[in-house]
Image (cartoon, rainbow over all chains, first blue to last red; front, side, top):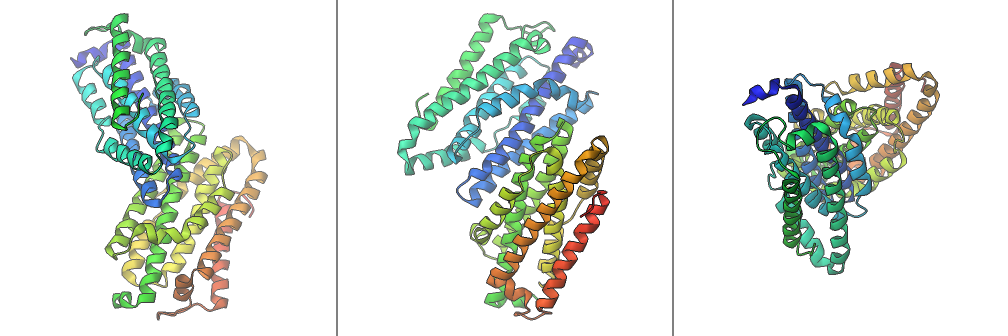
Length: 225
Length: 225
């Protein structure tokens, strides 16, 4: 299967995809580490910092994979700087709980999106991507923290539901932009390099799946989407 | 030597010292990770993030050491929250280069201070502290980045010299406050639990050594202190 990497367009799409993922993990690391400062106590700050450090480990693995493909990580990530800058600028948490929800909801929707796209690439690259998307108990921790905070302050749930809606809106906007406007990825999804291509209807179903999964996650928090 | 840990006052001083170091590493991790966003390119952002992750590793080791002493890490760190909050609030870099100088100068002066205090504790604890203060190529990287940036923009050096002066002023203020106002540490330094105690003249010399080391570091940057 990996002889497809000899196809220039396919290789470009893989480099783009790994660059997108790498920058997502790196910018996620940075924002999560900074948001950890909002924690009400040092132990929670350290737990959140630990989640950030895990993301940095994923970044390192993706960076190595890019180098292994003779791609310059910097160049592979560069096209996606504005994507993540915009996302994080528009979803800057102002409270600890908003940060927790962002870490849970924002990250999960990005993960779902990457996993969908990974369905269009060869097994070895797909396996690498899956490794960097592993949850490793992260969601359980975040859900527990969010639920406990909502128990002590039930009035907050309405505001958090709106916050989550903003997060998912921004995340889907960025995902759609990347999937449609970045030629190599658009062509990958369209099946240009073989494999099952997604027509517009399938793309729409994919975004529907992302939305459904989000609604289920909100339910886990006891919030309506 | 470690039977001294049975002395309540000595044990309290050790827990305080490890708590101080742990929170220093954790807050250093957070600020460094956030300041990495100021990087002009993703590769430098990732290098800076890597330094932050190293600090988090040190935090973990100190947290384990506290747990090993049957101390609650949260409680051990709590007395020093305002120390680090004040320091970081007053030394928030507004440019990448200011962040680099802070990582180099601010961290080094804290390290020198901890190393001085480590001279007053038993060898096993001292060895642990030394491990968490290891430089691991960090200074070389930061000096190189700062020097290169100053070559491309020589006019910046005056402003950076002032910035470094503010950093060292804030760091020494916080160190002095901790060494004098935190009873357990003040008594440790005064030799209350045995070992060579520092009188006021020796404390003054210690702060002189910290200042001298800072001047030498500035010279390495080609800046006057």
